[in-house]
Structure formats: structure tokens, C-alpha cells
Amino acid sequence: MYRHRQEGIWTHQNLLSYARKEGKTEGKLEGKLEVVKKLKTKNFTAQQISELTDLSIEEIEKL
Image (cartoon, rainbow, N blue to C red; front, side, top):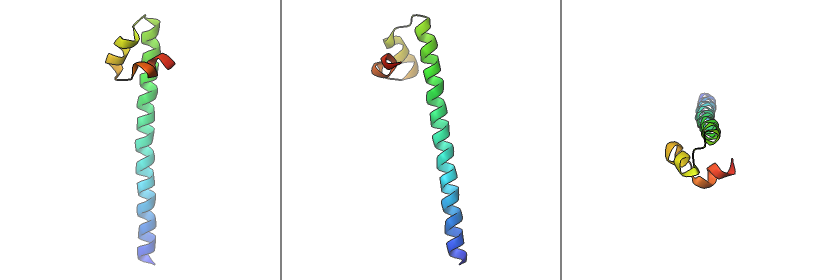
């Protein structure tokens, strides 16, 4: 019984850890997308934006 409960806790902890990592990753991407939009309004080229953000030119052009 104790072992089963402990495994459930580990699973719950792993799920929370995974969710935190996913949230951070999503937040970073959203931040980059906002930067891309601002750079586009300042007439930066897709190539320049790609070099600054590490996003592909294709990703930038989709925005």
C-alpha cells in the first residue's frame, strides 16, 4: 500500500515538473514572438530577426 501511494506521489511530482517546463518553454516562445512582431514594425529583415532570435526565416515570415 505504501509503495503504491509513493509511486502515485512520484507520478504527480513528475507531472508537475513536466508542466512547469512546458509552461516555461511556451512563455519563452511567446516572448520571442512578441519581439519578432516589434522588430518587423521597425523594418528589420527576416534574416536579421532570425539571427537575433534563433527562429527560422520561415517561422518569422508566417507571423
